[in-house]
Length: 306
Length: 280
Image 1: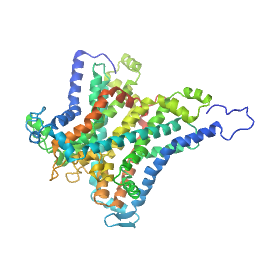
Image 2: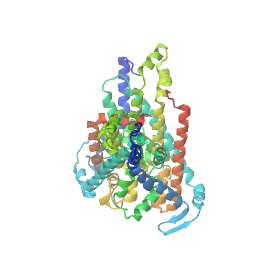
Image 3: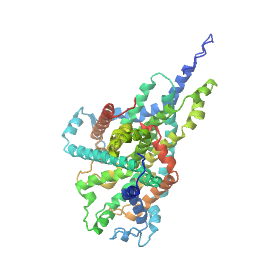
C-alpha cells in the first residue's frame, strides 16, 4: 500500500497495485456484506414494514394500519409487566454476572497451585449444552427436587422455586449466571494478567493497601474489558429465550415473560405477526439504545493509557 | 495482584473456591447420576448423591422415544457447517477490513457492525416469511444460513479484524514485493498465523449453533429434522409431565462429549478465547 506503484514505467497498466487491491478487498468482504444485507438489513426493513400492518396468519389478513400497532403497544396491559420482567432479568443478570466474574478472576489471579483445575471447572458450564443445563436446573428446582431436598435435610422448607412469581424470575437469572459467567471470568482474568506488576509494587511502596490498589490500579486498567463484556452481557441478556421456555414458559402468570418470549408468543403461538413485528422493533430500539448509551459512557469512565 | 500469601490465607482461598464451585459442578454431576436412576428413585428423600439402584435402560429409551441418533447428526453437521462457513467468511472479511485499502471500507465496516445490534430474535418474523417463500421451512437451511451471515458472524469478523490489525505487516510486505496476489498472501501467510483467533471464532460459533433454540422451534416441525436442544424438551409423558430420567439421559449424551473435548483441550480453549481482540 505504501509501495510506489512502479514509477519508472511509461504506460501505467489499468490494474495498478491499488486497483487490484481494492478489487480484492471487495471480493473478500462480498460474502459477508451480501449476507448481512440479505439476512439482517432487509429483514430489519421488513419487520418495520410488517409492524405497520394488521396481520393475522390464521385469518389471512394483511392490512395497512399505520401506527395502530404502536398505539396498541402503548395501551397493551401486559407491556409494563413484560418490560419490568425484562429489566429485572437484565439488570440482575448483568450485576450478578459481572461481579461474580470479577471475583472469580481475582481469585484465579492469585499465587496458588492448581488454579488451572478451578478455572476449568468454573468455565465448564459454558460448554454444556444450554438446554441440557437448563433441564438439570429445572429438575433441581422442582418442588420435590434436589435443592429443596437438601434444604429439607437442613430443616429448611424451600419455596416452590419455579411456581412462585418472585423466586421464578430469580431462578432464571441465577441459572443463566452460572451457565455463562465463566466467559467473562476468562476475559477478566486475561485483563488482570495484563496489568503491569510494577504498578502494584510502586503503590505498595507508597503504602496503598490491597483494596486501594484494586480500586485505583486494577479497575481503571481493566475498564476497557469491563465495558466490552458489559455490552456483550447486556445484549445477550435481552436475547434470553430457551431458559424461559424450558424453566417457566413465561409463568407463573406473566412473571417471567420477558420481551423475546412475549414476542415469540404473539407471533408464533397467537399468530399476530404484525404485532409481533412491532414488539421486534421495540426490542431493536432497546438493544440499540443500551449499546449506544454504554458506548457513550466509555468516554467518561473508561481509562486509556494514552 | 500476585503477592505471596500466608498459609492461612491460602486455605481460606481454597475453601472459598470449593464452595463457589458447587453450583458450577453439581448440576452436571446430578444430571449424570440421575440419568441412571429408576424413575421411582428420582425424587427420593434424602437426595441420593450416588444412585442406590441403577437403571441403564433410560439410555435405550431415549432412542426408542425419539429418532435421537438422527437428531444428534442434525445438530452435529449443522454446527460443523456453520463453524466452517463462519471461519471462512469472517476471516476473509476481517482480513480485508484490517489490511486492504479500498473505497468506503470504513463505511461498509460500520454497516456490517450494525449486525451486532440486530440479533436474530429481532428479525425472526420476516426471516420466517422469507424462508417460507423460499420453501425452506422444516429444512435446515435457516439454521445454516442465518448464523453464517447474521449477528454471530459479525462478531467473528470483528474478532478477526482486531487480530489482523495487531499482526505485524512486514511478513506480507515481503511476499507482496515478490509479486504474490492478495488471496495467496491471505491464504498462505496471514491465515496460518491467525490460528489462535480462528480457534476462538470456531469455539464461539460452534457453541452458538449447538445451543440454538428459538430458531429450530420456529423453523422446524418434524421430529426427524429436530436438533438436540429441541429434542431434549420432547421427552414428556401423555400428560405433558417430564420423564426426568430419560430426559436427563438425553441431556447427558448431549453435554458430555463437548465437555470431554473441552477438558482435553481446555488450555487452548480458554486461552484462545482470552487472547483475541476482546481485550478491548
